[in-house]
Image (cartoon, rainbow, N blue to C red; front, top):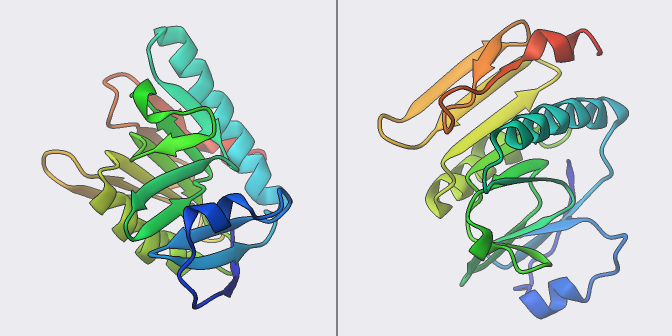
Length: 185
């Protein structure tokens, strides 16, 4: 979602938690960025991806859980960094405290909105990789492309079109058919 406004003060966890519930924001190295509401297209894609991931995890009866935005992820205390990925999978339940995920999720998907492409392609790629996220997808509806960043072993950065079936690399047998999603757009 697009960052509307950035503030130059060093934001703290206490200040973040005091924000009104209707305010959407992320904090990078103590700098707050306010976010606009997502579009209908964004939410359609998010819903389809959420259902696909949730159905896979249910079939596997595993420990992992999927969460859609808004759900906070505290990547760092110092400097304070809090994000709200569009979709994330957390396999280590000790990272969940009832309010947020503390530390890197295993898998994150961000859906590019019109005004924030650089956030997803540059800023969040940097933060997610350095925090220890195992796999990060960037879904770009305007370009009809999905960029898969797999950070384990041999680093992987591959682009797929929306007519592709894409493997989720952190699992051996999980594929998402984007042509099914593209048909809804």
